[in-house]
Amino acid sequence: MKTEVKPVAENEVELAVEVPRDDVEAKIERTISRLARETTIPGFRKGKVPRQIVLTRLGEDYVLSQTLNDFLPEWYESAVDEADLDPVSMPEIDFGDFTGKEPFAFTAKVQVRPEPVLGAYTGLEVSKGTVEITDAQVEAQLAMLQERFASLKPVEDRAVVKGDFVQIDFAGAVDDAPLEGARADDYMLEVGQGNLIPGFEDHLEGLTAGATTSFDLEFPDDYQAEELQGKAVTFAVTMKEIKEKVVPPLDDEFAQQASEFDTLAALRDDVRARLTTARESMVDREYRNGVVEQAVANATVTVPPAMIERQAHALYHELESTVGERGLEMAQYLEALGKTAEEIEADLRPRAEAEVKRGLVLAAIRDAEKITVSDTELRERIMEDAEVLQRDANQLVLDVYASGRQNMMRDELVIAKTVDFLVEHATPVSPEAAADKADAQARADDEPSGTADEPAGKAVGKVGKASAPRRPGKKTDDD
Image 1 (spheres, rainbow, N blue to C red):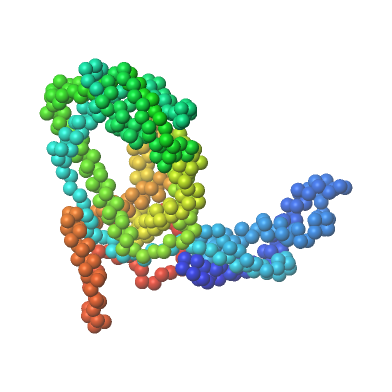
Image 2 (image 1 turned 45 degrees about the vertical axis):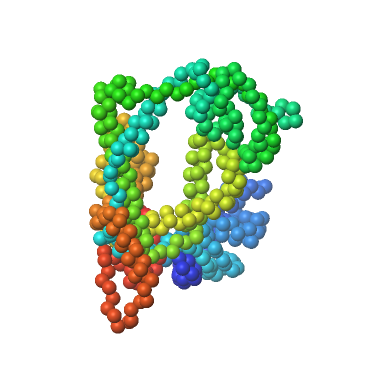
């Protein structure tokens, strides 16, 4: 088989292929043999139909078309392997006459996996936030804990004020006719939270238990029920019960009630420790992401449209699963947003492109640094998962390999190790220092460039090999 690769656009090539005549003839014979086994012709046992009878009964054109259906994908895959390409899109295949009596030539235009040109990815200075928990943050957490242990106490000696919990009957009417969906009995709400249409709860303030009132309101123009949008409604309300929220005082007794601690001081210390741990995790996560983002920003790569489309489609299905977990149908979700599935996927394209670019750059750094995951490391990870899942470790190892999930796990681990490598070779700086450096860089970028005689500045950080892009190659097992 002869193959020739010709670039036609960025990350797109045309593969010209010529299949030898003897291979073409052999594939036609295999097609005839298959058709002979599958075709029923009176006077012949199934599978025993002579070659010439098959050709006569089915026609040479049909046999040739079946040969193309059967073997064109195989010829294409063989040509891709021979040319050492890594396609990321379905091929656009074009060919002329297929006679079966001469070599068969065809072309395949396909998008290929790009190879990023790496910029600096070590010695990066990346902003890292501070881990500082203020007294106000601690008190806010304690206040939330107080709310969880609050109780409701009936009120008999005053009128409703904002923050009270009330139980009411209400009914809406339009032109004295009851409005469907605008009636409820024994309805409980917290006044001032805005759970009902604007203005409704304002009319409850000042009422006493047993009082009745009526008032006119208009449904908002963006109300979820279209038939009620902008409609004027008269509401009749009966105030049945008033309760006030009683928040327990912050003292040792509350600490004993709300936690395993005997004193409020010990509870405060625990809250601060938990907030510190959470903040440290968040700061570390943001720092790691910042390091990767800077390494990706320093690289140069154009993501093929096919890879963006595929990732956007995957993100859409992730969204679909999330919506389903919340008990909604995707059609309901789309209706609420006023968008189509195609519009949602279009909205996801920028995120999809960023995710694909991130993966390409991390894979390039992995290859440049020869980062791998050993079988021992993979087994240790599976055993860690077994402990979390409370499974027998050896059995889980067997299950992972039996299901073929080990390659996916190895890919995840090697990318995690690549990120670890970047973080280990980065330097954290304060957000203020990072902002000052960004401002200085922006000012430098705005200044006129020097003359050609001026010496170039010294590059900072390790730079990947990028001088001469080679022909797009096949991805490795870790990609």
